[in-house]
Amino acid sequence: MTDNIKKVQLNDLHESLGAKMVPFAGYNMPVRYSSDIEEHKTVREGVGVFDVSHMGEFMIRGAKALDLIQKVTSNDASKLVIGQAQYSCFPNEEGGIVDDLIVYKMADQEYMLVVNASNIEKDWNWINKHNNIGADLENISDRISLFAIQGPKAIEAVQSLTPIDLSSIKFYHFTTGQFAGVENVIISGTGYTGAGGFEIYVKNEDAESVWNAVFEAGKSLGIKPIGLGARDTLRLEMGYCLYGNDISDETSPLEAGLGWITKFTKDFINSENLKKQKEKGVDKKLVGFIINEKGIPRAHYPIVNNSGEVIGEVTSGTMSPSMGVGIGLGYVKSEYASPGTEIAITVRNKNIPATIEKLPLYKK
Image 1 (cartoon, helix red, strand yellow):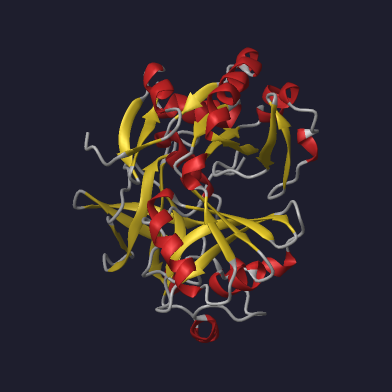
Image 2 (cartoon, helix red, strand yellow):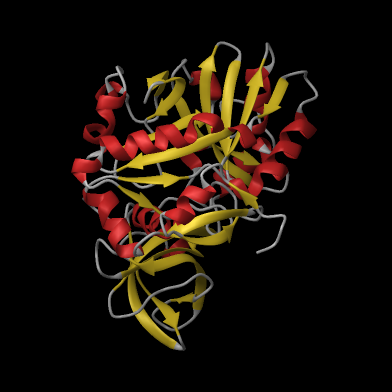
């Protein structure tokens, strides 16, 4: 392993649990502890915990904090109330996406932005480049650990650790309070799995005690640590975009189906051009699909129409552990993007029939 790879606070703990560690987004990360399928099912049916401390956190404060966020993000952060979070993206000047992120309103004139691990430096530079209005910025990424406690039994597993009524935290809302004996823990009703649950932000020095408390509290429910392998199959069943696969510097939010976080009620970077694109319509769209025969789609496999013409490309694909079939996301020419459209995926020179489906692909 190279020396410049970063380690999360609990790196040694994951290794002691027998995790298979891999380099991911510049960090040494647990990809699995047992098997991807077993871990996936643990989250869908019970409760599991991901260490996603590689994610980046930036604080934006001061009288100009909201102005800066409004300028660099596509969604309308002026609608946020304290204790609410919002999914958004940073548009670039060319019509693509710098990154997708979550904006948390912590207090009046104080926000936290949570960004993808692979883009921490890029995003930090991007925001600073556009901060010509005097907002106060602080990168706290290296001081914060983030655990995603996910699954239908998440509340039951950890309610004993906090006086806060976890069932009262709505989706994309959060509260700050005592958790596992630690003060000022951010408990957020967010996650990347579609299985329900929370994400909790703690200081690095409290990470191990909180992790251990969570596993002790959830023991009777079969709580397990979960790796990045299952994280990927869970998010794909829901049709959630992964930066670098399904969205990038070259894909527009409108092509990616993110029109709902692109609000033209305000000006933001490249909003004029994106508005024109919306009026004109996009040439390609990100869609979800299910394979109708045996076969596993993978990134970059061609998507073809019934005549065998290439109409697009797979961006993410896997065998769905919940559904037992091949599923994926990919861009296709807009005329083929409607749910129900019959397409095919070229897997090892063979065109395997598939159908475009409305997201999420996994219907509970």
